Length: 118
Image 1 (cartoon, one colour):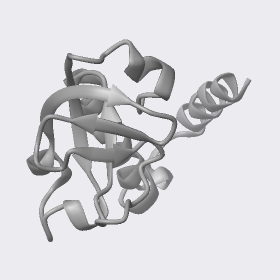
Image 2: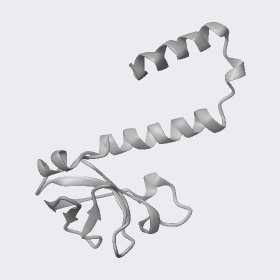
Image 3: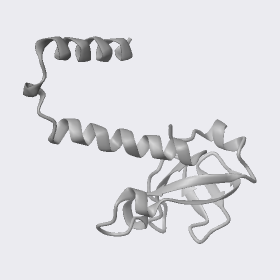
């Protein structure tokens, strides 16, 4: 879902979506409130360059020398799917009570998980 270098090269001159991380993300704000779009100018082996104040981000999402970091997506839909997956995984891990499910429901979940692993 996060754009690869090869995928980003196809989007030069086009709009991409950024999910700020680390220092770029506003404190105590939800991810959905921080996303923004900008035009991708160029892609190098390590960085992607944009037409906004951030100007560049590392392709691997790590911080650069100015502590800028973020994840790059080629569409808002892909970014929203990433956020939903992140929130749903967190919900399953921390809040969902699996003991409320029947044996049959649990076996069906197990079957689906095993299909994805393959």
